[in-house]
Image (cartoon, rainbow, N blue to C red; front, side, top):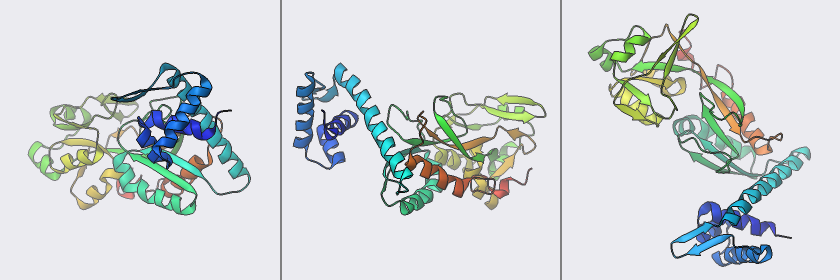
Length: 308
């Protein structure tokens, strides 16, 4: 029988890329981790890790074993969560979460602070990045996604609507004029969010859709940089309501094309497929619905609802 601590050590070594990093994650010495891996290799009769002066890497057998070990650990975690929930116990375990940088900094941080306070036995491991992580391959329990869902295999829970707006600074409008219809954007400098698969601005005009491929020399996958360029008067931008609300209130950004509706998006919590929702993910969903759900939320600020 292979020990679970040995399995955890092996998975940590492969995912972290080294014995030292794995030992730090597990809170044990490097020698203990090394002995555990060696013991597993002896018991299995196969080499799992290639060791060299240049570093370590999993063998072909090791990669296959790691894939199955990851499933075992995930199932064990779900089983523990299910029993704890059934017994009325507190939420436990580690919640590994990925979230967009700007949204995370502006809204998610306080929510996670409250979540940690509610559940003192819950560990949080949160990555704030605009990169679309591979939930399954990188072993995330959940991710916050905005606007579009690219992977239909993931299970999504819609939290709140997010309305995008076309905005520009007063200085830009004074110098270049205000676009009056979506097609006018083709002659403007546009600041483009490069995090989408195909950068398109889709407007609803009556019963039909008009898609514009914006032109511009400035592209970024970071919402805060996107905002700063727009405030600097460098172009017209499509930005979500939770980013631009304060700037519109202050008058530092002006919404344009307000008679045309852009495709509405949403805030989602997505998780890997499976019939059981882990208690830690359920706790995240519940508190996000409390704090952000509905049209009165920060994700859907009242200053931007006047157009309706």
